Length: 72
Length: 139
Image (tube, rainbow over all chains, first blue to last red; front, top):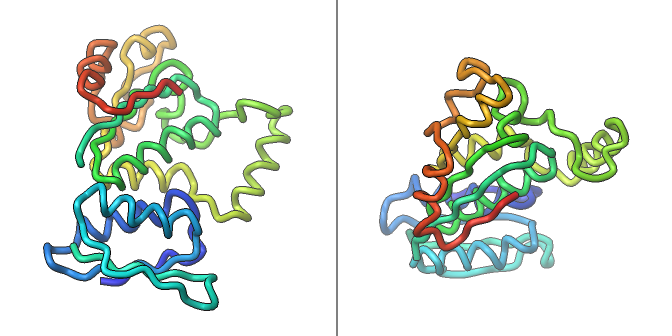
């Protein structure tokens, strides 16, 4: 499952990520693409709080975008 | 982690309604439970068509300030309150409407967005909810 929150600002990336995680089944891979700087830090924080594993955080487009991979 | 955030929204000011819904959504996004208790001026925002109607808490300037802030919010791509409310509900957030405010202000149930409201209550409902909350704020 992939969600695109590029251009969205607080709290939309976090909220959309949570919605996707709710819809995903255990074991599913959820990929979040975004540009909002604080969310790059806070989505992994939310995953930690929910006991979910972040598989990777990657910078894209010369650091203007990021991509976070989460295992539900 | 779990946990619970229980917010009291006493103000009907647009910027404070944003604060309440953003914090509420943030809590839900972190896997917590969240509820917002709408009371006094805050309750006015649950009137049909009333969610975006609040003035700015500062520099409202007869609507000029609000107009300017709204323009800047649009430019910054800030979500409308209606979306934040729908997200809050979709993620399982609870909306509580204060019954005493309804009595004082002469508001009838039919005037409010009943589709958003999960519970009608008084102080007991807030305290009962907040008893075991790890976050509780008065906005």
